[in-house]
Image 1 (spheres, rainbow, N blue to C red):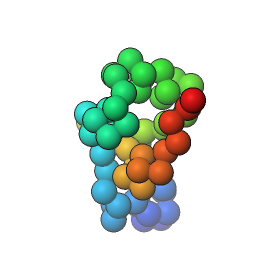
Image 2 (image 1 turned 30 degrees about the vertical axis):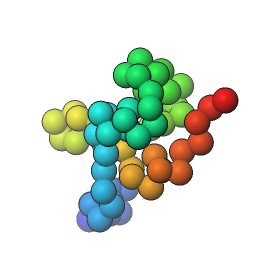
Image 3 (image 1 turned 120 degrees about the vertical axis):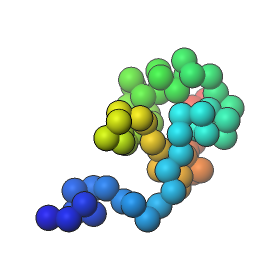
Image 4 (image 1 turned 90 degrees about the vertical axis):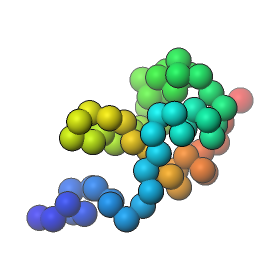
Length: 64
């Protein structure tokens, strides 16, 4: 089984927490809350750093 079959997609750009907060204009607390509530689900690097799918974030609908 290769990495793509495990759900890892190395071809798409990934965003950091700072990138997501800047793009969505939200605070770290809001991002943390959305992760806790499963509204945004990060992927983690081997060093446990959160990364977010670029396409998902760019198409994310902000809660009203």
